[in-house]
Every structure is written in structure tokens, then in C-alpha cells.
Amino acid sequence: MNRNMLFLLSAIVTGSIPPARAADVSSASESLSAVIMPQVSQEKFTLSGDALFAFDSATLNQSALWRLDTLAKKFKAIAHLEEVILVGHTDRLRSDGHSERNQLLSEQRAASIKQYLIGKGIAADKILANGAGSSQPVLECSTKPVKEKQIACLQPNRRVDIILRGGKSMDDNKKQIK
Image (cartoon, rainbow, N blue to C red; front, side, top):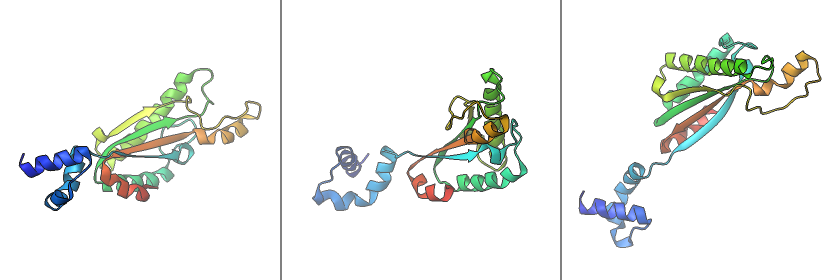
């Protein structure tokens, strides 16, 4: 490592570059600071489970495909995409006192989306698929209404959360994903 690079490294670590030396190192400072101190960005958004799957199913609807196609294109356009985390969620219905049924369904839904994204060119090793079952509801509803009303009320709980993690340049792409 040459003297200028050592000086630049010292300046980055301490947060100061003396004015007399700033001209010597200004062109390299951004690229070196990105290598030494990468900034990680994270973006989370949610897709409605009902827009992707039929009730109590892990098979993608035809209408879901264009949404996932759009997402796949946008994911591929992110320069420093490190990982895509998919977390499937269900509502509390259909568990009949057995939470493992909803856990399995949530895992299957996340896996369906993972396989679809892999088929669209997203690297398999960048996608993590998990299920949370009905353990993380965003809305609680009374158990008194008839089943059809419960299904409608609990709809926001049937979802897939997508978390994107990437380097500094990912910040420029956040607007495209929404």
C-alpha cells in the first residue's frame, strides 16, 4: 500500500482529511471508503397473499405472475443485490388448533415464489425462503363473526414479506421497486 493510500485510509478512519492533502486523495476517497466501509441498505415491502394464491393454497395464481415478473426484472436491475428474503404468512384460520398446518403453508408459499424468481433469473443462492405461519399477524379479528367475515377480516395477515438487502447503490433503486 503506497503512502497516499495509507494517508487516505487514516483520513477515512478518523473522519478528517487535512486541507493541504485533500486534492491528492479526493478522487480515490469515495471508491476506497465504499470498499472499506460498505453501506448496507435494506428495503421491505409486502405482497398480499390473496393476490398471489387461492385461499389455503401454495400454488401461484395466474394473476400473480405479472407481479412477480415485474419484481424479478427490478431485482435483476439492482447493481449490488446481496439477498432477497421471502417470509410467508398465514392467518389463524384453517389451523384447527394445529399451528404446524399454517406453518407448512407459509413455507410452501415462500418456496413457490422463490422457485418462480429462480426461473426468472434471480440467483438461487441470493434467495432465502421462510415461513412464519400465523405467528406474526398484522390484524386481529373477533372470532364471533361467521367464517366468511373472518376470512375477509383476516386478509391482511395472508401475505408474503420481501426484504431486499444490498450495498450502497441499492438506495438508488428503492423507488423502482415500490
